[in-house]
Length: 321
Image (tube, rainbow, N blue to C red; front, top):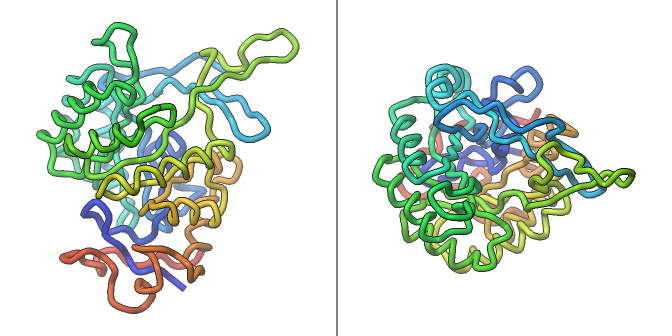
């Protein structure tokens, strides 16, 4: 059993399962282990204007229901990502769709990133990582928690690209639904819900932080109820597609997000324990008969459930692995 492609953000996806940003590098790092072409797609590591070495080690610490990480946006910078990383993706991925994640510390940095990447091949859309602190504001609140700054980023970036813009929002936003509306009003074509939740783990012996940066982002199974709730709350408030992410370990978890209102899901932390987890989830979802739109029964062998004007033949269905 295979799924028929569906159009989301004006892009045809062969299945709803993507690899989350920060968990798959730029694809090449996993290509010897993971069949990327069996997935709906992947989101690149977040790209910044200048190369970043990242935060001090240790960068990851596990706990019973997940992990806390503080990688520090380690990446090769915009020019190398554009000139060295994206060409490999363009040459090797035909069915899986690529979203490029960008992260800035000022509104202008986001604009320069989108402008600088726009002419490159090898990707379908931008995911705007809004978790960075805004260096132009006193206190440096994350863009995702500063609505004026968020709308400035989305609005300015919208003017720089014809590609879809997907805004990645934070789980610790007390006004998440209003923030989601603001992002869409500013020009976002979709939303990724949610990013990691701030967290800290201490060594029980000496009380020192278990990761080098002190605090980090919590992900894994403990995050899933928060993510599903966020998707459910936002789905009724906006009319753009949503990507659900947080704590997905199996097809049932992915279905929670799809039933809550997501069109796509991203698998992150699960890939660290089982690198082919996303492949397994995509394969298991293709066997299910209870998938909601746009992946439901109407997409199995009947007329395409893609939006008018979509070209399902452009993305062959993935075969079981």
